[in-house]
Image (tube, rainbow over all chains, first blue to last red; front, top):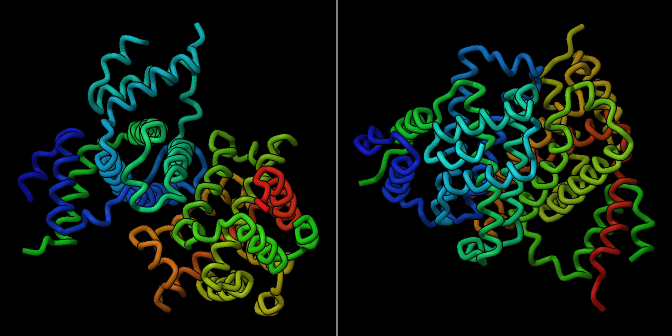
Length: 111
Length: 111
Length: 111
Length: 111
């Protein structure tokens, strides 16, 4: 397993490592899109929790220890998002590209 | 702008396009980590909404039209997650790799 | 139905109206605690959405039209919370009272 | 304080106790609607967490220990919802009644 973790360097290798990780632990039956969406929003909320009482300014200058905790919640959110996209056979990067192209029409940049 | 969108093919190019997109629209002042975390969980919830009344089985076999909507919400969630990580100077892939290595110790795979 | 709605004046009468509302529409099979928890967080996020780009000050002085929208999201969140508590046979007021008593010990007031 | 906690028996007395609780701890400056909305969704997510890997059936028959934990998260969500409504001067019961009346028109009951 440690080899496949070391090889993570982009979204496809992250997805592959997560597949192997879940399979080795027999977690696949739990990984329905419904459940993964729930797990993802739970991690997103753990991220939000770090900012709930912060002023906008404080949120831009987190103490190092807090930043490390936030980094873990960011990671957890990404992990479930990658697993959810994988379960639905969605290419995350292509989906984001298409959405930004759509947003560029919806919110044209001023000149 | 369309050129930089076309060039999106991984997380770093996605981050770069999002930076340019936000700057061209003067959205940067709104993009505090606190606000981005809120925007991200809102998108995550729009994703959850598609699954709230679905059975686990239905969530695994979405009709094509619904899958397209889900794909957009997945994209929106990723977009804000990338912007949040960028605002905090967090490398998403490195953070996920470190978290999986930690999880591998916490949840050892059975033999 | 309009009679039972008119009679809503506290949490128990709200719960009773919601029971009747769901039964009249055959929604009960969908109202598992799992699904209701999802529906509730979706409404909570629609509430959060109104505040995501607001400064703390703006969030304290919403324009009347926006306040009306927020009022509806607050209502939706309460509705699902009441339905979830009902599905689990939890007395909301007693639960809140017990939690505040616990918090009073955890966070003693300074003198 | 313990007296006012003992007197909680409906939403208005809950709101009054929460006001006193926050004031005694100088928490009021943190209780902007923006921050309270964030705190509420964080608690809602802690509730969701209890159900994320559960089957619909399991979610309907929680073990007693888990039900007690869920009861606390339900309480926390209600507490922040009451504080948010109070900060915005929203009458929770009236808001829910109005929303149900609206829903009754939007989703008419079959005969």
